[in-house]
Image 1: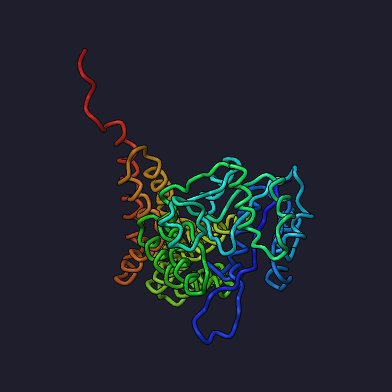
Image 2 (image 1 turned 180 degrees about the vertical axis):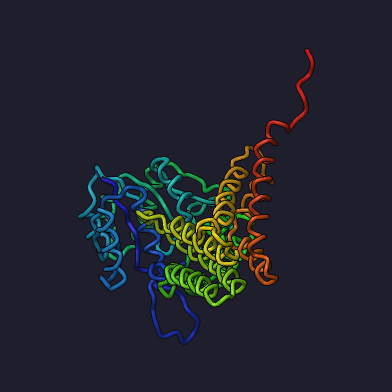
Length: 419
């Protein structure tokens, strides 16, 4: 059985006069406690039992217990080495994470899945970051994967010993392999030992910045969403909002934009849709950060896809409302150009994105598929009473771009040599 060992014994350090003693493990980064991040790592590594060394079972640990049990793992709280030894057998495999460790999930999983080892780092970087010295050249990295029989050796230790340090020494005496952290962990926020609320705030900024680099691209909406998440994301995540509130606000704003067209204010309607799309992208990025950090499963319904199609429906309705009716024309005919425009926007952006080796094409794909950009262009056209013709012109423009993109790969490059 694979067993995870996490700790909530150390008290975070504070400035003078701070009245509340908070365990390191319960300091929050990205809206979740450090222990919750470690639990996500343990579950991702397939641990069937999670043992938390803590002086008392408090509300924070009870919440962890519910998460562990939801992940089909048994959760135990022990106060010291005696209780730990009773729960681990020689046949088990133990993954131990130091009190206050915040490790980049993919990196930590890869290092610990590679086999039993003590993770180490150069002494210069480790001591500055607060990790324990191992020898003249190395410091602990705060994580190890050890065979269960090493835990049995702790029965000889005093009841009040530092369990993680004692297990680390036992692993080193048994000559367990040492695995060096790769150089990329020294980028701020990838591998940290958080000891105070001040350090948690600093690490949190880097943690969210690193997660937000994965999404958004270089489109205007992506850039705005990343800046918004980096600026306001920590406060929203600490308040318990993982983007759902922003998602609801985005949908309501888009519906208000649709209502504006009813009062013959299409420019305001398109502008509202542009802002709505930015709010939605910010909401999606917040949810993605939380899901990636905590290993949460994806929802059965793809909310991004649903809201994307909903936005297209609202934009099509807004464009159709700006096209004056013609005698004898059916209502559906007014929606032809808007539907063609939005369909081509999806098709052309995918075509450009799929071009092999074309970084520029991928960038343009994001711009052409950005609904906020399209809505702002249409808002400008609606302001001068030309939204109807603009939708038809834009549809033809997208068609031309799609045809050119489809022909370009065949025409690129010099002709083959003769002979």
